Length: 233
Length: 254
Image (tube, rainbow over all chains, first blue to last red; front, side):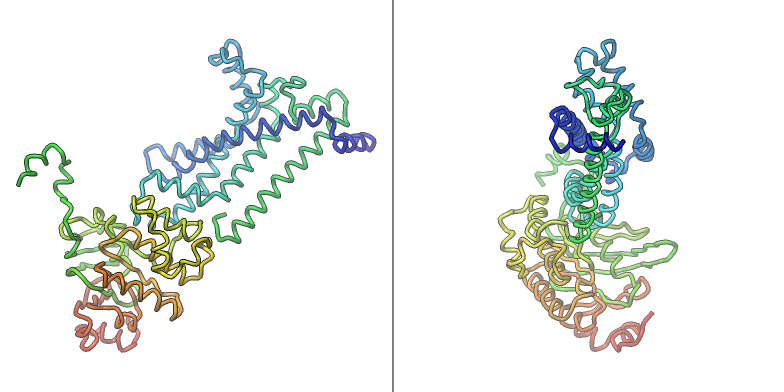
């Protein structure tokens, strides 16, 4: 164990090429998924926060329930759609980074939407009368709320990214953990552990931990900054 | 009139029923009542406001001043009675008025961006930002985050934002309630200038001194009703209602 740890640290310190490739792909996939999930989830969350429409309650329940989607189930569903016999099989995306981005987007878009809905609804309660006095359109209201809640919404995005980069089930199923192609940190850790290559697994574990801690530190910093500037947390 | 022929084709029936009047005044409220949480907060308000000048709405806490202002602005609908701005319903008149709240709700962006947002949203001339900031004495704070301004500066920015929409009627809900005398004076000057420039001002306050400085006529509300409405000189010399007299004497009125 101690020996493996020492090897792991030297792998990280020396900037091992395999290790760097895996980390880079992980970040690329999860950051892309976070951006896509934000593009879908933020407007959706804002719309539900501001709008009063029939079925809003059902949408709220669905959004909150989908926050807890099990990654392997998302992986399975995406797999069924992307596999050769599936409806999107012609795209040839299975076992590519795109399939992994798609799966992670589906996994975290509900998280982003549900958290954003809460943030924006709170802010809207404060702004509502002023906005009605100014006779703003629905689109102008949503735009202003999204911008004014930007610091809080960045923490929402980071929460989504944290979930995406740490999950293993979905990317394993739709990516296939193919070396140099779809191998990311979590799938590599699972594989190397079962193969007994503990130094590489541990090295990846260290990087993943550092990223997770970094994300949390960033969230904390944003919260503090938001509180200090009187912005919404 | 010739537009009888075109109106059937170009106007929706509702627009016809509420043809936009050239001016919002006179304002008329008849039998306006509102119940909130089981309490009768407005209990048959009758009020007529003539064009021009500055009207001050006064009364003890809970008299219904702020709620009446919200109803006049069209933010809340009454349970009974009608509010009419020269024939236009209150909710149709919102865009031609501006309301300055007791506690300004400023956007979380710079002073300049707060004004730019409103000018852009309402199709105003975005080149007016500097002029508006100058007008309220905030030219040197243009880049400051609005939420970092002092209370008085925030309220001045809220006033600049209200004026940016070129309102025909400017409604103010105790805008100086938590400000020091210097900041209060700055606000009063801006409001007086707006009134002098032809904007109809309706000002809620419970500060008797402020009412004396600003009012051309005073509306005194007590327990959800208008109990006195008179020119300022007459109101302060000889208030027509015992509650108003007690209030001016500085006695507690509940």
